[in-house]
Amino acid sequence: SGGSAYGLAAADGAMKYLEEQGIGFKVGRNVVPIVPSAIIYDLAVGDPSVRPDSAAGYDACKSATTGIFAQGNVGAGTGATVAKVLGSNRSIKGGLGSDSIRLPNGLTVGVLVVVNAIGSIHDPHTGNLVAGPRSSDGSMASASEILISGNDIGEQSLGANTTIGVIATDATLTKSQANQLASSAHDGLALSIRPSHLIGDGDTIFAVATGGASHPDQEIADAHSLNRIIAAAVDCTSQAIVNAVRSATGVSGVPSVDEVHTSGSLGN
Image (tube, rainbow, N blue to C red; front, side, top):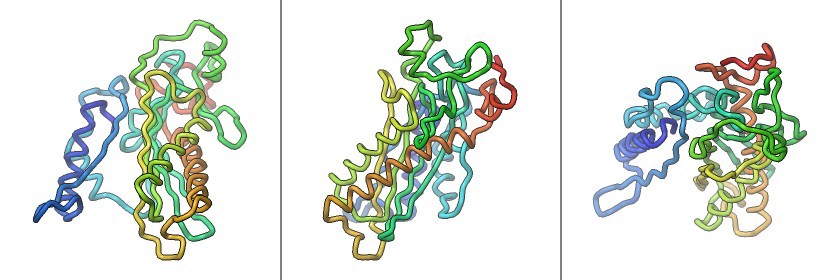
């Protein structure tokens, strides 16, 4: 969710919806939904009083779909920004992004991320810069090169840069396998966000295994099968990050990457 700590209220709405559906941890005749949550700090973009609440979380659950959905400036990605190493006034619009892979054995791996990183965004396959801090001439630069060079950088809020996401697969995984999947998916962050995992970053990835697939490889019992899922998760995560930024549109003085390419201007 967006909205900083205020956005954690959205989890309450999700719990309410799941309780109504009878989904959760069974305790006697009762059900207790377990809803882990994570947020990004985006209160500096737009009106800080407009933020997710319990009703927003409930509505999000009701609106869940297996079809195509919007990316960019939607949901938790509404106020997300990236490339903030020169300060927020030189940042680029981030957002919400997704990607998925259907493996040859029939298993599916999907990723949803909210990209609110201090680093630059790079194409994971070519290494080319997709979005970086805006320099004085209107061009974009590499956040890593700026930091390494030792040149003066803008004022940075160390607690305002976080990329969060969820990896989902229809395989059946143990808790330790799911933990390994979530941990390895951070490699996808490092491929597309440079630098990533800096001091103050709150990067968080959840892993979900639904066990809904109906084929011999549904239950992952060997290292090779798990490695296949991990590799897919890393690839999807890195591509979803790029999709989030490329799908975003500019807001509140923060331009999208397309707008920077079109105008070459710094904005305010």
